[in-house]
Image (cartoon, rainbow, N blue to C red):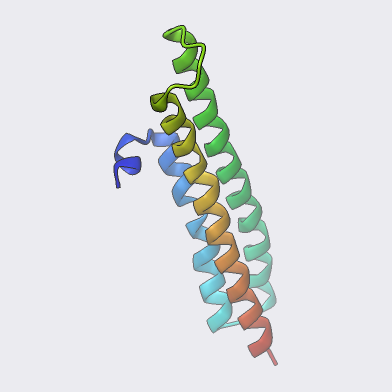
Length: 111
């Protein structure tokens, strides 16, 4: 929970955008049709881009932190910052995995 407290606005946005394709995946699993599948595809790309952007911004912030304090080695604080930046991509890809499992259920149910 402390990761969310330390996260900036862009990190939070990049964490919650992958929930959009997940919600559409749930809708597709319940009511499968081509329009919902098209939206899942497009929103999946949005989720991927958001996750990668969140991770990149986390690494950028970590490197800026190191340069401003003239840190030349990987200290525990810097390592924790870089580890927190990976939360975005881990959560995003986890949501996308669940999304596409729901799509598979929807395709199985589709007449």
